[in-house]
Structure formats: structure tokens, C-alpha cells
Image 1 (cartoon, rainbow, N blue to C red):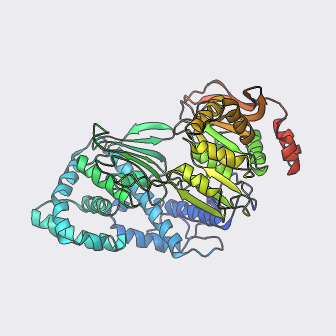
Image 2: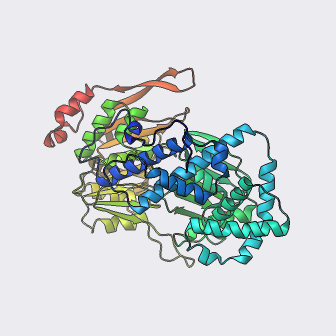
Image 3: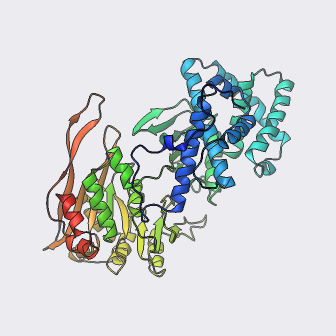
Length: 538
């Protein structure tokens, strides 16, 4: 399908492998992870191959169905590892590659025509005129059951007829963009679909109909994406929550939800949100983040990564502390990869977003009350129930209220290796917050008893922070030693020391070991890891 332009007939995926491959062990790599890596590399190779053959205008002019067929044909000529791909994996490769190619081509076209808003205005006007007529001619319920490719063909034909009847003149590229926008409104999340497909975006923040921000590489940017009006935003919000059996209206004006791919969503609408419906999406990362990856990215030092690996394998109870958007869940995912595949792990979250790779994982999620105020299941209820499920470890997505007491009791009664996150800016503040949250359980306990529970349950606090250059760094690793009188005693193992900025405005610093002997050395010795621990502290 694609004309040759000096590229090879067969592309070897070896050239797309990580130049610094991370050594894999049975603890950190299973078949699912390997297959995921093969799919990612195949998509990268396919994108590179097509970009070497077609110009942006050629990509934009081809009908989407024809382009998808061509990609599938080209995929067959790639030199893949000796691993048969399933139909679902092939579909993921084709869809992901197609989205990336079109996004890049459109962005390049926008860059060439910067400041020209006439096309966007014409498309928006055409969409407003065509959409109600299209809805009259199709059965939306049946349309949602048809594959997107087949539906695109049928919708394209109907849209062509409507454009002719209404004397609306669009070129082929504009017609395809119009059909894509209509399909996104019918099946997806409307104007947000291109942002969801862009893997460089971490957060999507909708502030009413006319203001959509994104976070890319730790920095907020205002996009040119808009909705028609506030009812259009409400339509997308309702589609998100209805997919998981929840509702958003004046009686339930705020909802936590998740998308099909696992992305976390918070929605709040008027009268609570004064300027219109507000949607906040924390995107689900397809890239599997490990401690090795974080080490290469400079999020922590090699010595810190080694100590965290040993801490996880020594079954320490670890509390991850940090501010909003600092990377707590990402770090929790990375640490959870070190859990032995033979252990039974129970995860508890408000909106499920953890990505554990072990074969024996039970995922629990809270439930809000119904319209009558009944039926609510809280994190505390789930923690209590988890204790009856014979877990080896319990992982609590975020400790925020009375469940802190039940989690501490679980950590103190044989569920070593449990983990959780908490919002706090410093390790000492994390301990204070835990103490306050235990009081929220409604159980009257002396302060000394609560602190004794905390000191006995928590072994290590890992502090993570998103710094002003947008980079997330582990700024400290702190051990909980025990009690002295009524005070919980701790000792720092590592700290990040800021030293300045480079020419590009990035923060520069060093990850410094305190040189202290870790309190859990004897525990690491039980697992045969004491020598490696002391060498890492160096």
C-alpha cells in the first residue's frame, strides 16, 4: 500500500529495543509484561516505518479504514519476536499506531498553519448542523454495538448525503475530521479523545466548556480544545459515570470514576462548580514504570533503588508520602512489582488504578451511597473484610480516614509487606496525619497507644515530590525506629539535596546517603540481603 522511499522491506525490532536494557528476573518480569513490551515495540516500529514512507498530507487524505488496512498489511512484514500475537494485540498495535500517526500529522499541519482558525470554525459549524440530522437517521443504541471501523464507513456515507443536502462544502480531510469528531461524540469522550490518545499527556483538566488544560512533563498547558457548551460537557460526564454504574446530577454533583483503560476521573458539576462542569482525568499510563526506569529517569539514585528493592523483598510495611500529583501511585506500582508471585495480594482503592502484575491479586473498590443514602461501602469496610480473605499483603491506594486504624492493626497482626499512600509533605507530617486519621475512626485511644501502634506497624516512609521543574523525585527515605517516651523516633537513610539549576531551568541536586546502619538490617539478614543493603548505604 505504501510507496517505498528508501526504507527496508523488513524492519527488525532489535533496533527499537531499549539501549540500556533492564535485567529481568522472575520477580520482575512475567509473560504479560513481556507481551506488552512486544506490542509497544511493534507499534513503535510500525510508526517509524510508515513515517518514512508517507508525508503528513498523504496520511491525512487517506480514509481511516484504508489506512488501518494498510497498517495491518505492513505489520505482517515486520520481523517480530517468536511470539504469536493475538487478534486483540494486533488490534491494539494498529489502533495505537494509527492514532499516533494522525495526531502527529495534524499537529504538524497546525504548526504550518499557525493562527489560521477558519478551518476549525468551519468544522464546528458543520458539526453543529450535521449532528442532529445524523442522530435522526441512525439508531444510536445499535451503533454503539457495531465496531468503530464499520460504523465509520456507514456514518461517512450518511454524512456525505447530509452535506450534499445542506449544501455544506468540505474537502476530504475536513470531512474525515468531521466524521471522527462525530464518532468521538457517539462512542468516546468527544473533544477529549485526541488528548486521551496522546501518551505524553499525564492529566486532562476540563474547566467548563471553553477551557481545557493538560499536564505534560510536569507543566500545565492550555489547549485549543473546547466543547460546544456546558450541556455538551455534561453529556460526556454522564457517559463516563454511567459506564461504571454511577450517576452525576444535582442530587449527586460530585463523583469519582474511572475510564475503560483505568484512567482515574473526578467530576464535579453545578451548583458546586460555579463556572460549569469540571472534569479532572489522571491518565492511566500504558508504560510500565519500574524502579529501574525511575532510576534511569533520575527520580532516585541507584543506591536508593537497591534499598527499596531490599525493603520490599524483606516484607517491610512501607508508607509512601507526597503531595497531589507527586507520583505516589506510580511509585506504589513500581514497589509492588517486587512482590513474590506466590503471594495473595488484596488491593483497596476508591477508584481502581493500581497495576499489579502478580497472578494472585484481588482488587476491591469502594461504593458510594445510592439516592436514598444507603448502600455505601467505605475503605474501612473493605479493609475489615480483607482481613477475612487470607491476604499475604494488603495494599491501600490512599489512606485518608478511619481505615488508618484497621490498616495499622493489619500491619501489626502478620500482614507484613503491606503498603499504602498518604498525602503529606514530610515524613514526620505523614506520621502526624496517620495519628489524626486514627482518631477519625471514632475509637477513643490514648495518644501514646496510637503512636505505639504506628511505630510498631510502619517500618519505612518514602517521601516523593513533584518539584518546580516538573520532575518527580524521591526526596527522602526514612525509617521508623520505635518509641522514646511518647515520641515516635525515626532516622533518615537518604535525602535529596538541591544544589542549583542547569541552563534549561532543570533542578540539579544529589541523592545523599546518611551513612547510617539501617534499623532493618537484621530483618534483611533473614532474607540473605544484609550485605547488599550495607553496600548500598556505603
